[in-house]
Image (cartoon, rainbow, N blue to C red):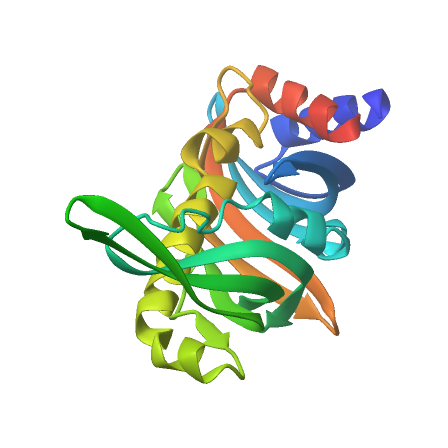
Length: 249
C-alpha cells in the first residue's frame, strides 16, 4: 500500500489527472446502539492545480449488515411508551417482534410488526384516570430517504407518512391519532441515526482535507441495500497522502 501511495503522489505531481479505485474499506457505524461495519468501495478522480489537488469522490456502501440487524436496531429506537403523554388517546408500542429494511430504488421501506396498546387518559375531579381502549399486533411501515441538511452532513428522514395496519376496529378508529404518534416518534429517532456529528465522524479527520458532500442516496442490487454518495474536496499533497493511508488500512 505504501508503494501505491508513493506512486499516486508522484503521478499526481507529474500529471494533471488521475483516477484511483479504492476499497473495500470497512467503516464502523453505530445505529440505534447496534455496532456494524459497512464495506465501502469508491473512486477518486484527482486533478492538480499548482500546489493543490481537487478530488471528486464516488463511494458505494454495502448496507447488508444493517439489513441483517434490522430487528435489534428497531428495538433500539425509542417509540411511543407513555400511556398518558397527553389527554385523550395515546399509543404505546409494547414490543417489536420483527423488522426488515426493503430497498425501493432510492428509498427504503421500514417494515415492523409490533404489539401496541391504546390508552385513554383523562382527569375526573382532578383524579387521573387511565383506561385501556384496545390492543393488537400491528404492522407499521414507513418509507425513509437520505438527505443533506448541510453540505457537510448526511441525514435520514421519513419520505412519506407511516402507515399502521390493524384488524382491531377500535384501533382503526383511532388510526389518525396513532399514525401521528408513530410519525413523530420515527422522525425524531431517524434524525438521530445519522445526525451531523455522526455523519462528520464517519469521514476521516485529516488536516487539509475539506470534503463537501454533493449527494447521498439509497440504491439496490437485487434485495441488497446500498448507499451511493459523491462529493468533492481540495487537498494538499500531505493531506492526500494521509487520505490514501487511511483508505489502505
